[in-house]
Length: 525
Ligand code: ADP
Image 1 (tube, rainbow, N blue to C red):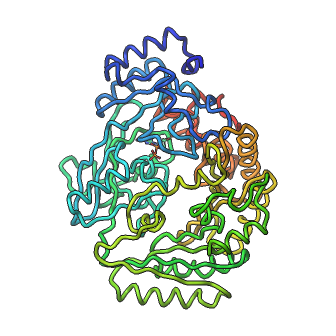
Image 2 (spheres, protein in one colour):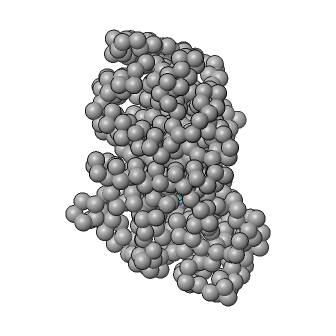
């Protein structure tokens, strides 16, 4: 493959910039060979992976090195694309939005800078994964839990900045963040909130600080390079209960959502709760070809037979209760009361105390133990498994959930995809996550996955729904759905972008935000 140059730059200019960067971080930390850059290609690209190829990758080890690298980027106007561990799979991995951008890979900044057991927080650098933080807490005997995302190898910083979510009471990762250190495009370094007090001690305790609060501005944006991040941790509970309720009918979904909502709103269920579609649950236990080997979406009869055989519900509600046994029992009784009247619903619960641990991957996540169980889904369809996700926000109302489900399932079947999805419940909204699983060695499946995603986004737009996160290929499309007053929201985002980053060197195009220098690159691929 010919090297991908940064846009608007000659090979000679790029060579000079690379030499300057090598002088800062050393030869070994500037990657340019095809072999080393392969790691920065999107492993699950729903199209041609080269469309988002990086021009090079830089691996600094300190904030000072980052600032020096930035000076060179500004001088040559080369766009950088920051990743923490680059495992943002299904949304683009470590690949940049604008081909030829240089990936600023922060995996070598991997220190756990502080853990406070009393006040229940940690301060970490971008290269710290959920596995790392979990192991550190265990090793030192801290009675604190992490809230893992679906794949534990991702970084705490990367996942939090993308507003990822997990399973426990701390499942809303953006909400559990407190305090950041950020390098701006001009090299200035700031600490948000109480971090502004130089000898202060409340940086990880009170997010707002004094005056305007900026933490949220650095999430899903391209306004800065986050080099430290505070995260609240859950005190290890004395006991917990992991519950599952299986529902037998497809149209139980609306009832589940309407009965779950009051329990989430009043805190009876304080963990994120997941309403998992039967097929997704089954994919954790078996491979598709056991049940159906034909082309197109699995027929209803095969789905029904599979669920029956595996003893899995059409919908499966998973939740966790944490606290003292008395409180758990009282809360569980309320949940039983709410759901036991749904015809043929099957409730089950497992109780844990002290050091007892669940064994299944999903259950371990709810017990604050990171796993890689999410990767089992890649085997569902056979071949070189990959997926691209459609992730609209859904109001926590039965009517909306049923509407989104029908919309997505119908469209997916049209393109030959199974409904592999579910809803993760906040109190007032649901994250509806649908994954189009495909074999990346099968050109037709890859193309169909891309076409399906584009159709789903058009459907969502027509129905007034918007996505919470999108793959690189659809970032502009997703941003355009937020079109009130001729796109006033994006206008504001780009006004801020131009003020902070006049040379457009930080992640052009991320979340549809293009700096003036690259605005002509916007495109709904
Ligand atoms: P993970 O490996 O945890 O899944 P990534 O490192 O791939 O996460 O990060 C996901 C996305 O978040 C990146 O593509 C990038 O846009 C943004 N991002 C990650 N780390 C940083 C950071 N330290 N500063 C700014 N943006 C970041």
